[in-house]
Image (cartoon, rainbow, N blue to C red; front, top):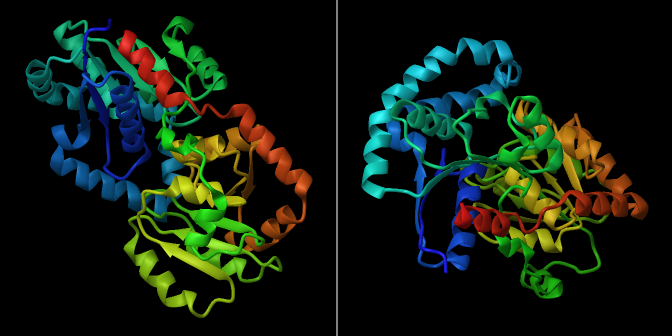
Length: 372
C-alpha cells in the first residue's frame, strides 16, 4: 500500500495550457490516490504577483503586435546565454519564498508544467542542497533550452521525438519518459453525438466546424468566420471566444448578418462535447489543446500560428500528417471546402492523429508521480 504523498504542482498564468495540465494531473492523482495532498499553485503569482501582471501583458502585446520579436527570443541560444545571469538573480530572489512554501507544506515532490517555476525549483535545490524530487512536464512538442537543468529528476515529454531532442540537449535518456501532454480525461468519455446536436439545435446531416483560439480566444477568429461565409459547403459553426469578451461582443453583433448557422460560446467547460460532434477543428495549436484534439482523432486546421511554440507545434503536427496549416486566414473557406469534399484526406488526418495521440497521458503521469 502506497503511503499518501504531498505533491506541489506549479504552473504560470491562470488561463493557460500550463494550468489545464496541472488540473488534469491533480484530477488523475486524486482518482488513483484520494488521500494525496495536492497544492496546485501559480508559481509566478506566488513569487512575483506584480511582475506576473506586467509580464503577461507585455507577452500578449508582443505576440499580437510583433510576433517576429517573440520568434527571435524563443529558444535562441544567444538569448538563453545572455539571460543566464538575470535568470539566476531572479531565482535567488525567489528562493526565500520557495523555502518558506516548502517548509510549510513539506512536499514529497514538485511537478512543473512550465519552464519558469522548473528553473526556480532547480536553482532552489542547488542553492540549499535539497534532495527534493523535481519533475518537468513539457506541454509543447519542442523542448526549449529554458527547461534544461541537472536538478530535474524526470522529464515527461509529449512524444518520443521530443525525448530525442531533449537527449541532444544533454539530458540522460533514463530521466525522460514520453508519456504525453496531460489533459482532463473527460475527453476520453464517449457521448451520444445526436443528443448533443439536438441540445444545440444542430442538423445531424450537416458538417460541424469547431473554431477556437485557446482559453483566451486568440488568433484571427473574426477573419476566419468572415472567410467561412464564402464556403460553398452548408456548414454549421461552433465558435468559442474563451475569456476574450471583446471578440465575443463583436461576433455576437455580427452573427445575425451572417448566412452560416453559427453557435457562439464564451469560456466554457464542455469543449470535450463540442469536439465529439465536430467534423473539423480550426484552432491555435497550443500543446494541451493539441493533445485533446489528437485524442478525438479530430482533423485539425491551423491558421497563422504564432512564432515560437505554436509554429513548432504546427511543424510537428504537419510533419506527422495530423494537421493542415494555412498562412492566410482569408483563404480558410477554400481549404474547408476542399477538405469536406475529400473523405480520403479526412481519413488520413484522423489516422495520423490516432498514431501520435496519447489519450492516457494524465493517468500515466499520475501513476509515475505516485511511485517516485
